[in-house]
View 1 (cartoon, rainbow, N blue to C red):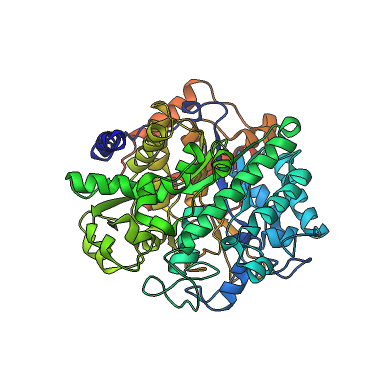
View 2: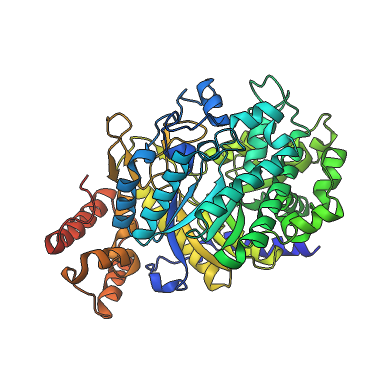
Amino acid sequence: MRRELCWTLLILVVGARDGITAEAISREDFPPEFVFGSGSSAYQVEGAAFDDGRTPSVWDTFAHSGRVLDKSNGDIACDQYHKYKEDVKLMVDTGLEAYRFSISWPRLIPNGRGLVNPKGLQYYNSLINELLDNGIQPHVTLFHYDLPQALEDEYQGWLSPKIVKDFTAYADVCFKEFGDRVSHWTTLNEPNVLTLGAYDIGFFPPGRCSSPFGFNCTEGNSTVEPYIAAHNILLAHASVARLYKKKYLAKQKGIIGINIFAYFLVPFTNTIEDTRATQRANDFYIGWFMDPLMFGDYPEIVKKNAGSRIPSFTPSQSRQVQGSADFFGLNHYTTFYVKDDPDSLNNNPRDFRGDMAIKLTAKADRVSKAEESPNVVYEAKLSSGTDAIPPGMQGVLQYLKQTYDNPPIYIHENGQMAFHNASLNDMSRVKYLEDYIQSLLQAVRNGSDVRGYFSWSFLDAFELFDGYQSSFGLYYVDFNSPDLKRYPKLSAHWFMDPLMFGDYPETVKKNVGSRIPSFTQANPDKCKAQLTSLDRTITPHYMSRMILIVSTTIQEIFGEIWPSS
């Protein structure tokens, strides 16, 4: 009843979507310790797949088998492995305060366990040092989908409890080698997406599924394997967190958390059935991981509907998992609508989606599409950049605040997808980012303990479903050029623009020094007032001209800050 009441209150957030004003964003609106950054992951940007001792991950195997939509792979990607200094310079130009990236397990420990690769160690030391030398905080994810293929071959990776020991040993190396300079650790990225994509639908490696739930899988069991993998992931996270707090916390004084993907979910109608279905969907999508981490066990409805297919925690495991996250990373892109589907509980066999007993769609008038598709979870993820519903950011944060006693949160991913090569003039993405940050600001003002915001992504990258067909980056990467040249999009300029934050980025002021004039207290207010008064329907051409005039004026004063496009 408490959660149903919570939902009755929360759906009012979306109903009041026009209440989020177009006031200009100021850095001063956020707490001083709040960080703005952008992110990436190892397989999506590093490249150098066969260089310096790296061995294949499951993503290498999956991509080379032709399972990606455009038949591409991450062999070269953005080649950040060789171009990290150039990319860090772009981060400085953009005014990033933090950079979220992941460590490639098969680059650091090629066999998944045992000997450390000196070249891999050297690369991550160099990247971390380069970031710190330029005033940028490293926020490190230990696992972003790229399991060493050796461990998949040996014992089926996350399906085996053996993974707990090997993942903990890998994390131990990372803490030992990098923990003196890294204070923000995330164990795993989006385990709720990973488990369903890899073991239910088969869209992610190792591509396991069973009929009728997935496609093109030669082995797997969609009805049980997602629950088994999730259980081992939670135990692995808890083991790593326990190691850090026991062995490294006193000296390194860092924090360790885990990342969850979450929509804001809204009842399709105001009926009690759809309201309860919406809470049930949240229990499955979010509570599946958040409840054990906060309360020590899976939600009751998840255990009831999954039955014997979901593993149970022993009392000792429950104690280890509960409270093991110092913070939660949140990946949020859009809002979805939920309709009750009680008939799915009559299906036998039944997978995770059937256990939820819902129908999910991106728009309230498109339930028919959800009914037709067995893969709505992943259609939702992949279309996440197309349906911008900014109040959903405030809504999902309010839900987490009320349900889980306001845990510390970093927005680890938020951004808009577009077709690659679409345009450098990504005005739609600028509006998306501005509106979602405005919604985030409302949540902060309402008491949500949000401590940072990372756009996804810093560079156009190899996207994990369709390769190079789509992009999220602030910077366009010309994948057809030999040197993979980077070009700033309008969204990159917006991130660094005085009109956004009321002042130049701290890194720009530091590097340029006395050559850059200072704003008086009134100047940024005037800048922000001008931005507020701009017609929100202004054409992308006019907006890009305005940004160009601002950037040209800055360059005339103290030289080039960002590369010309």
